Amino acid sequence: MEMRRLGRTKMIVSAIGMGGIPIQRVSESQASAVIETAVSYGINFIDTARAYSDSEAKIGRVLVRHREKLIIATKSMARNREDMKKEIERSLQDLKTDYIDLYQVHNVKDESSLEQVLAPDGALVALKEARELGKVRHIGITGHIPAVLVKAVRTGEFETVQFPFNPIETAGIEELLPLASQMDAGTIAMKPFAGGALKNKVLTLKFILEKGFATVIPGMDTPQQVEENILATEGRLLTEEDNEVLREEVSALEGNLCRRCEYCLPCSQGIDIPLVFLLDGYWTRYGLQEWAVEGYQPLRVKASECADCGECETRCPYGLPIREMLREAAGHLEKR
Image (cartoon, rainbow, N blue to C red; front, side, top):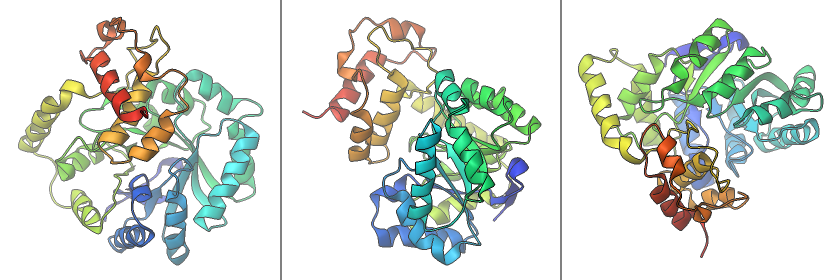
């Protein structure tokens, strides 16, 4: 397994890490088998989150056997000091450990959320306090909008940055990746297969690693997936033929895939269009129907409230049939 330095954390992580979302949908014994297989092949970086239901707990049951070998990253949606303080304690309990290698602020999606995190009573204060106490060793941030993450990285407060990157979603390559390199912030690529849409997995992982990420974290729920993914660190670099295969796959998928650029916003009805499509992706491609519906319920304005004005479609740079996609998402996510 190729190992890389995770920015100024100076932690040495496996180029292929493990994303914790799929662990939710498998049994405890199957989760254990997947993690043990990953460890046996040299994967030492595992990413999870408070929001991933029992993912932390399942990882924790295996972590106790390999604590010194593994680098554990988790994250919380908490935005203020008190909530983040509680979330850190819950993570420590569920992961069955007395320290967490990397604790990240989860899904900072706009400047308002970032301001909350950075406020005098914000989540960052709790993370720094936990770091002083040795409960958290390093602090990072995750999100889907490169422009927001650029602002976050520029503060110098975050040692790592995690965001989606794959042959379809390459927005971070222009500014965020170079800035992270300049500031020595460790880079973590999530959603490498675009929510399961990309099928040439080894080529896709090679594509991402060749862009300079410290680690990429595909979700895995079988030992066979682990064995397939680690092949990306072996052998040659991508050839022009490989790149052409990826270009053809991307071209075939471009029809109805939201890249979360947010040019469609604001919606006149107040629908958070990219978030609806993100949750619908979990429903359709990850097989996490119950979890997606649970995440959808708190949304103030539902997809079914679309006024069919079409204004969003005029702003979408990819020409997506947003109104049709919202109707499909409503059919999946709204309980009848």
